[in-house]
Amino acid sequence: MASKLGCFRPVLFGCLGIVVILLIGLGIAALFAWRGVDKARVEDRDLLAATEVTAVAGDAADDTPAAPPGRVILDLAQGEFTIHRGTAGEGVRVKARFNQEAYELTDDLEILPDSTWVYRVRYRRTMPALQAILQSLFGGGGESRVDVYLPPDVPIALEVQVQRGGGEVDLGGMWLTDGQIDVSKGGFSLQISEPLVEPLDRLVITGKMGGLDVSGVGNASPRTFDVNWRMGGANIDLGGGWLRDCDVSLAVNMGGMSVTVPRDVILEDAASAESQLQAPPRETSAPVLRLRKTFKRGEIDVIRR
Image 1 (tube, one colour):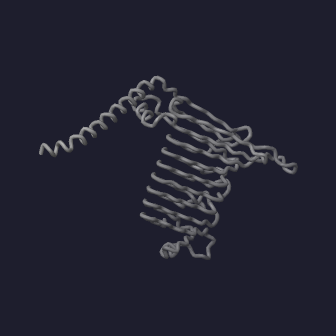
Image 2 (image 1 turned 90 degrees about the horizontal axis):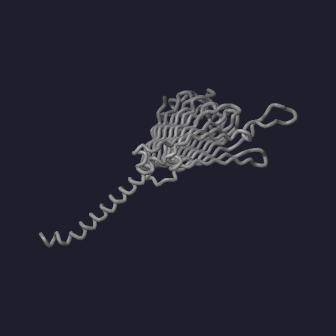
């Protein structure tokens, strides 16, 4: 027995050494985090891309100001993020609250030669993850929140990237021309609570390692609606006031997806004859949702409600 223990003794001491090193490293990180509590500078930041983004003069035949279309690109990570309908005539507004020692917020507005514009917002943690977590535990400015307000009177193509954070978005009443959303390692909730100013051309949602909840897609009436979700669960509600037909493509890999389809639309799903039997008669003018499902190591449940 002694000889057997002797053989394992180097391994045991090696494992013990690794544990000791990890504990020392954790202690040093905790010490830096504790010392950094007093240095935390929690800031309220208010950014406004207003002058160039708001309405410009129309042509000679129409003196009514016309809003130049633009693109808003939001690259957000490690925080809590929300998108709201803003105030007409104000432009794009960003309000944030964060610790300057741990996070960084930047923005950039580019006006193109044809008067269209691109507004980029980037938010990132600059402090090592472990130190930021420990500092928040010590009460050192752990709040990390960004609120974005989009004007309802400006046509906007929206791109959203959320990493390692939570996103909550309500696009109801906005004027969107295109929507692309990508989520990684976080939860995301998208609601379209009321019809958009004009039907959306395309809405694409991709993501992995997190949860997704989408409701009111019909209020956007997109021409195409694509969702590709991996390693997580998703709830998709296609309800709302549909104004036209839509090609719906849903894909899930290593997860589950629940899809709710309203009864006042025609569902064309080759994989389910039952869903078509429950649809309104084709003689009606009800919008047609052409559904295509792809799933691997998971499932997609379609519910008529």
